Length: 383
Image (cartoon, rainbow, N blue to C red; front, top):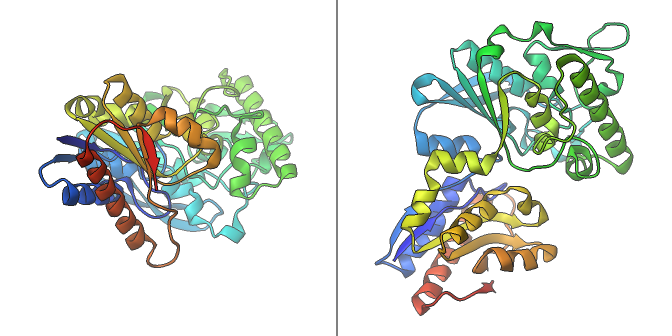
C-alpha cells in the first residue's frame, strides 16, 4: 500500500510539514508495511515559505521591516533556484499573528513591511519574486507594499497619505513614476489562497474584514476606500484591479501587487503543486491523505485540501481528509469532495497546543490506517 500524506497547515498549531509528519507517524504505527510519502502543501497562506523551502531547498534571509501596525519586526524570506528566485510569505511581515487580538485594526494595518521584503529581495539580485498571500492583519489593498516600493499615494493637496485602509479615504491620485526601477525587470508571481475580488459583497473587506476586527460600519468604509484606491490605480496605471480573482486575498494585497508590471495572480495551490510535483506523487499513490485545521465554506475558495482532493479524484485515487473540525455548513461539500473525513478535534490553546495537536493528528493517522486495514474504499465521516 502506497500512501501520500499531503496536508495543509493546521493554522495556529502545526505547520504543514509538522502536520504531515504527525499523520504519517500514526499511519506507520497501524500500517507498518505501507510505503508512506510526506508531501506537505500550501495554498499561499500560512506555511507557504516553509512548504516551498521543504521541497526546493534554498536558504532564508532575515530582514527587519515595519510590522502591520508600525514598529519593527524581524521577518524572513527564502531564496531558491540558485539565488534567482525569492519566496515571500506576506504573513511573516504583515500577518495577523503579529498583532494581539485586542489591537486588531484593519483601518491602520499596513502591508508596508511586505513591500520592504520585496524591495530587499530585488536589491539582492533576485529576478523572480513569488509572494504567498494569506493570514494578513491588513485591509489596505496592498497600498502599503506599493508605498514601500516607491509608489506615491497622494491626497488632493499632493501630500503623501499615511498607512492603512482607513487612509485610502484621503487618496486623490497614484503616482507610479517613482516605482523601484528594478521592479519593471522582475517577474512577480502572486500565490493567492482565495479567489475573492478586491471589492463588493465577496471582496476583501466584506468577507475577511470582520476576522481582522472590522465592524459592519468599518467594513463599508474599507470597501469604499478600496474602490477609491482601485479607481486611482486604473487612472494612473491603466490596470483595473477591482474584480480580478484573487485581488481580495490578504486584505487586497493581491490587487495592489497586480498593478505592478510583470505580475501574475495565480491560485496558490496550483503554483505550489507544480513546484512540488504533486500530480506525479498522486499518480504513484494508492491512497491520498490531506487535511487542515478547519474545513469550512472558505476552504472551497482555493484552499489546499480541496485542491489535493480534486487532483486525487481526477486520477481516481481515494482521498481522506484529516481535519481539526468541520463547520456544519461544510459537511455536505466535504462528503462530495472526500471519500472519508476524520475529525481529529479542535486545537487546544496555551503552551501545550502544538504538542496536543501533533498527538491528535498522530491518533487520526493511526485511525485512517486501521480503516484502510479493514479494507475497501468506504465513503464516510469519522470522529
